[in-house]
Amino acid sequence: MLSAVDRAITDETVTDNAVYRSPGDRESANDESATIAEGSTFPAGTALVGFFVWFILARALANVTAQRERLLEIATFAGVFGAVLASLSLVGSLVRASLANRGGARALHAVRAIAAVPVALLVFAALFGEPKLGFQWAGFVGAVATLWTSAVVAIARPGALTAARITFALLVIGESIELAYAPAQALLSVASAGGIAMAWLGRGAEIATIGGAVCASLWAYRASERAVGAQRTRLFLPFPVALGAMLLALVVVLPSSAAAILGRTAFGARFDLVTSDTVTAVHRLTLVGYLIAPTLLLASVALSLASVGYDNGAGGRRASGWLLVLFAGFGVLRLAGPMDPIRLVMVALAAVLLERSSDREKLL
Image 1 (cartoon, rainbow, N blue to C red):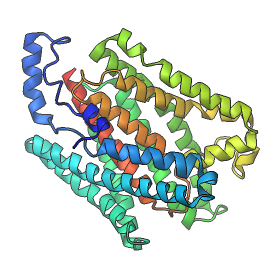
Image 2 (image 1 turned 180 degrees about the horizontal axis):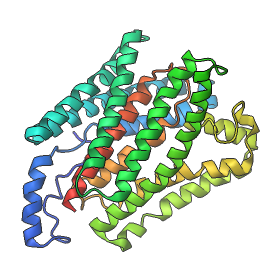
Image 3 (image 1 turned 30 degrees about the vertical axis):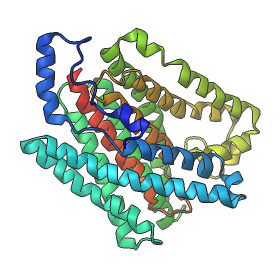
Image 4 (image 1 turned 45 degrees about the horizontal axis):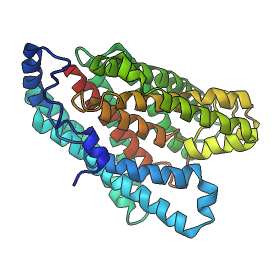
């Protein structure tokens, strides 16, 4: 049975959008929708529920969870549960896309599905202990390949929104650096030429993240406005504004060192743009500036949900993709190791969901 989240993402109720289309347009859209109808994204929505629990317990409340065995067990189960379902959704989504298309598009999605398989295998290998190094590198290459192919397909798609193309360009730049950052951190000395180069690339990744978050919110607003109009779209703006105000309140109330540590544990923020040694030295105003990215990603999620039910599943996929990007955070080295299976599968699935969202926007 589909979860409530997956039912919201499915395109079952939007094959005939009579409110926003003329009869001729609806007939053309229905013909085209037959080539991309991949059904729901199950189990991506259910995986998001697991990832949400894992993010709160293992990342946002890491210090509290570490002192309570039961919470630690729940966090571990939720993370594993989400990763397994995400890996199945990752490969399944691309396989369904391949079966629903014809000719070159079918072959392209089949190749993308094959490239995503190592990511899923890494997740399942991690269930039985630390995966072998070959599995880890294969999962890393598979995640990077999935990210790049998804971005290239979305950018090259005829009729794609300009904001979407710019967003994908910034996404692939930022996430490519972030995916490589943790392995580089484990293999390279900070004082080496490679370590210094990665420090500069880390700054570039943070700039790409902030710029990408701005473009993502513009993309979400423009896509939802085309589907349901500006009035309905704006009704969903108070939600991210309220959450942004809550995050701002935390930064203001907590000591700056505590807020910086929370940003590092929750999102993996390195603050490369302002410091290269310790996060405890981050100024409070800098922390406020770093809230731009998560706040705008939450705005992208909310604005995407505005068109759910009227956009052939594009809004639900877009919202899910940005939530995964938010949960994945920056690519710092964690206890899970440089090839963190949970982070790799989240980034790969996010790229696929965002690309499939841009594909369904063709029908708007």
